[in-house]
Length: 120
Image (cartoon, rainbow, N blue to C red):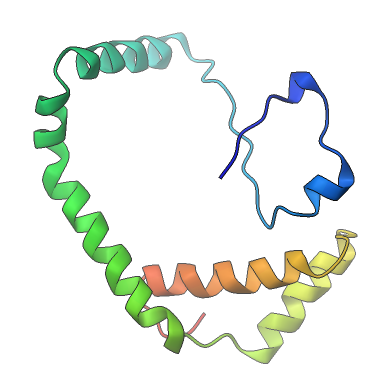
């Protein structure tokens, strides 16, 4: 996991090749939502134990779901036709190397396992 500021310039291609996936996170633009985020962050800073207690059951459910997915993952199947489709898309997008194919195959299986499925 890493972060970067695009205002500081693009990463060199040899570094970009090391990332299998990335997400672009943008700052919230809606002023009402921005105020809500700031208020909630301030509330957390003032009483983190209250927040931890309020979200404990949701956090435990998420932990349990992840552990179940980890156990299921080795048995998840990804059909040959879908593997070919992934490679076609990577090729069409002119992805260098095979890292995109590999990571997309892995991510598809992980997503299926997270959703309790034995097949992508």
